[in-house]
Every structure is written in C-alpha cells, then in structure tokens.
Image (cartoon, rainbow, N blue to C red; front, side, top):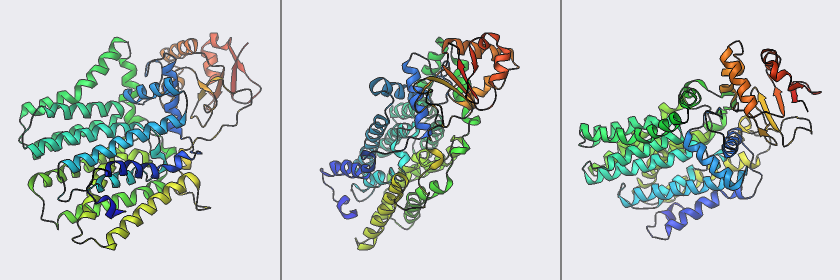
Length: 470
C-alpha cells in the first residue's frame, strides 16, 4: 500500500478518494451510534429551521457558521444522521485532496508522492466519532486553506495580498469553531519568523481575520442579540466543560499512532540535510501549528478524538517525512505502514461494532446517546429537560431556548433574580413545552415564582415530569 501511494500519477487522486471511502465503509453499513453532541447539533438546526435565532432564542454554544450549516442540513434533510455523515465525508475528502495538493504541487518534500493524502485519510479514521460533521472538522478545512496561503508566500519569497486571504480563512474557521481563533497567533508567528513581512502586512492579516467576526457581531447587534452572543458563545468557551463525556482511554488509543509516527517523522528531520530553505520553513510552520493546537486543548468542552482533528495536518505532514526518510524502499517501512493502518481500522471497527468482546476501549460509551426511560405518551412531543439531557430528545422536540443546561442554569437556577424569572416566563410563553422533565427540582420554585405558569402546568403521574394542562 505504501509503495502504491508513492507512485506519482494523476489517477492517484481518485485512488485517495476510493481509499478514504473504503475506510469509511463501516458507516455505510448502518448501525452507527448517535452521539450526544451530534444530537445537540441536530436540535440546534431544527430550532433554527423553526425561525428561532441562535443564542438569542436558542441557548447553545455552537459557533455561528456551524449553526448555519446544521440549519441548512435540517432544512434539506430533517433530523437525519446519514446526512451529517455524508456531509462529513464530503468535507473530509476536500481536506484530503487539498492537503495533498499543497504538499505535492509546492514540492514541500523532495519526493513528490500521494502519501500525504493517504496518511491524512487514514488519520481521519482513528475513531468512529470523526465520521460526524463536527464544528472542528469544518473549521479545520479553512485552517488548511490558511496553511496553503502561507505556503504560497513562502514559495514565492514575497508577502502579497494573500496575507489578507490567510487571515480571512482563519476568521471563517473561528466562526465554525471558536478555539480556532488561536491560529491567529500561529499566522502572526509564521509571518514574523519566516517571511519578510512588514507592519502593514500584519495589519492586513489581522483585518482579514477580524472582518468576518465583525460582520457577525454587527448582525447580532442589529437583531438585539449581542448580549446573548457574549453569554452563550464567547464566555462559554471558558465556563462550559462537559467532563462527563470524556473518555481518556479511547482518546489515548486513537491518538497514539498518528502522533507517534508524527513525532518520529519530526525527529528524523534533524538527521536529513536535503531540504531547501523554503521546505525547512514550511516544516517549522507546521511545528508551530502543532504547538498552537496543544494550547487549544484547555478550550475544548470535552475530550474525544473528534476534537483532536486539528492535530491531523501536522501528524500527517511529519509522518509523511518519516516514511519518505528511508533511503531505500524496503519491506520494513511497508510493514510499518500496514501495521499502523490495520490498528487504526481495528480501533474504528471496535468502536462501531465491538469486534473484540468484553473490551470497551474505542466505543466512547460516555459520548453515546442512550434512550431515556420516558412514558410512551411522551413521544414526538415538545419537551424541556431541566438538567443534563440523556436521550430525552431522541424521539422528541426541544422547546424554549434552554437547550444547553450549562447555559440554561444561568436563568433556571437563579430564580431569586427578578430578571431571570421574567426571562423564563417570556421564553415559556414564546415556545411552550408540552412536558417539562425536571431532573434538578427547579419546577416547584419556578411555579411558585410565576403564578401564570402554575395555571398552565401541573405535576404529571410520572415523577419529576410536569405536563401542560389541557
């Protein structure tokens, strides 16, 4: 397989696509588990499709462009997991082909092969949760475009208006996934250390980065949503942490091979003296990418392989150098590549199908939705879950803006504040739920504070569930 992708031929572009689709074959066979974040993204798109505005009418911390994407998918296909998976496949293929194009066309390595794309495709399958359309996956596409712009600058050895283009891509990536804003630092350092950029060039790149952000802020300002934008998105990056979704064992098992081969490739650079100046600079730029990506980890809401897709470009980049650094093609490097691919595929199949009985590693049990034990009458209803949702929305629809409990608690656990009480009442009035599933015993106090709601809702025969009076 390694020797195959070393062949420099036009048909290899198609081979990369076929190779990636074969790796994703388990998803096409059905039975892919629905993930908790995935369900949340579907609910956001569903609510936006009903005319509600993100942040102001939907309390969630998904970034605005990701929310728009989920709204578009819901408008076209409804709440369909397959649509999200197919969209993720399309985004992944774009990343694979573009990454390989940049490396191949700009002669970043002495040997022109399609191995960078093959490794990128392989690393995009280190865990089954990477098969969904996550905000980080979408943001990673535009970060790659920014990398391509930097490579052009380094190859031409002159700083042009592509600096604005680079900044614009980073700004768009930020609007898909807010922690991607750290890559503004990456771009600044790359320009500072490896180009002859001036202050004007840095200002041009900065303007390109903040321009799309300013447009979004202006939109929310004109729609009376700046305060909601700040509370639900900007400050939530530091406050909202869903630690109950973490799975450190599966995360370690998924990342050990890509990062391991990436590190070995980075170390072998120091023993290779056949690079020209711009190739060395590109290697250093990619090393900076890895360092900045490390600083994004504390900003992640939870730790799962899908969040670490940002590490795939440097891992694939340096792993490519590792496999190309062997002076003679031998069965050893072929064996290593095959071994790595087999283990990655095994981890993916283990997560999806449980091919090794009794082993939970790779299954990401904490990240999967589990059907809630609700009465049969609560199906296809508009509900509000007060507390952490655990599958109640799988067969129901969300009501009121309080989708994310970490953000909803700003109002629902602050009922001694008059403004919070008014907010809750207004939100119930605009989008009343048929049932309220109270997990943290908030409803008694809420009904006491708002007599108008007490006239509309009553305790149902089921414990902790309130229903709207007929």
